Image 1 (cartoon, rainbow, N blue to C red):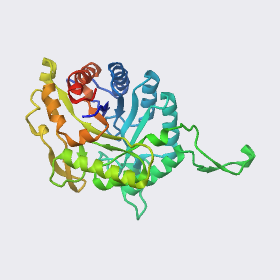
Image 2 (image 1 turned 180 degrees about the horizontal axis):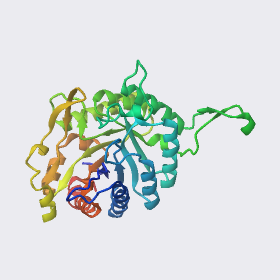
Image 3 (image 1 turned 30 degrees about the horizontal axis):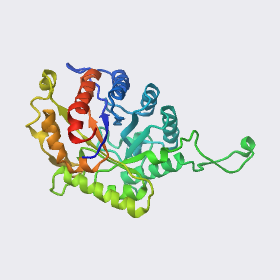
Amino acid sequence: MAPKRIGFLSFGHWQAIPGSQVRSAADALLQTIELAVAAEELGVDGAYVRVHHFAPQLASPFPLLAAIGARTSRIEIGTAVIDMRYENPLYMAEDAASADLISGGRLQLGISRGSPETALRGSESFGYVPADDETDADLARSHTAVFRAAIAGAGVAHANPQMTGSTGALSIQPLSPGLPDRIWWGSGTRQTAKWTGEQGMNLMSSTLLTEDTGVPFDELQAEQIAIFREAWAAAGWQREPRVSVSRSILPIVNDTDRAYFGGRGTGEESTDQVGYLDGGLARFGKSYTGEPDAIANELKSDAAVQAADTVLLTVPNQLGVDYNAHMLETILTHVAPELGWR
């Protein structure tokens, strides 16, 4: 396998239950910052967060990303993903540019239509209701179009001539050079992967695909990636696209690892799962749990991992900073070299 960028992905759960090291929202936010700092010191390439609303998980990402950017100097910072149905695209454009400038241009922003959520029609509570002829996906894409135009410097408001001496169009401020090329779309199907390539956004694909053709998860995801790259080339985009896939990788090298995950290598999580989600079939990717050499051998045959340039490692954030830093170090030391990622 070719060298890979390796990032961690935190869902930022918090819960005041026995065994949880993340008992409050403050814990989740502050520990995510500390894990990013530790990950950078270890040589990890990216610190990514998932965004959920109306749940005890990370929500508004930009204060957190700006804080990580201020505490680090090299690691990529990003989202995987922001549900665009909830976003005011112009306010988001200002926030994103600000966070990118604070980090020195390290923001990798994953966005999408979002996933099933705890709230019914949650985006409507934020004031965003699809038009009568629109779907939720249409709403997310229209917000995305406004957002992308804004971060690229498009005029979005008429100037007040009494204040500016001009009648031209004003862009949002600040603007951050290069940010428009660092927008990713979280795709769950081959059709949306094709659309992503046509739009000139990088591709994110998680451990869930919202379609199923009967082939193993990694093969379906690899097909999705190939379709994306074909669409990208056909659209004539000149820069090289990036592709990330997420994986749950839980190496066991000591008794603590064994206590947490020793029984997970042979259960349901060790194989793909197929179920119904949002009214249709979906395929969930398996977890990779066990001795590092066994995990490396399994990943060598993962077609989507081979096709991607970036692998995002989902972390069990409720186990705390120290444990997750240990897990990341184990992967960097004992798994990544066996795969040629390092």
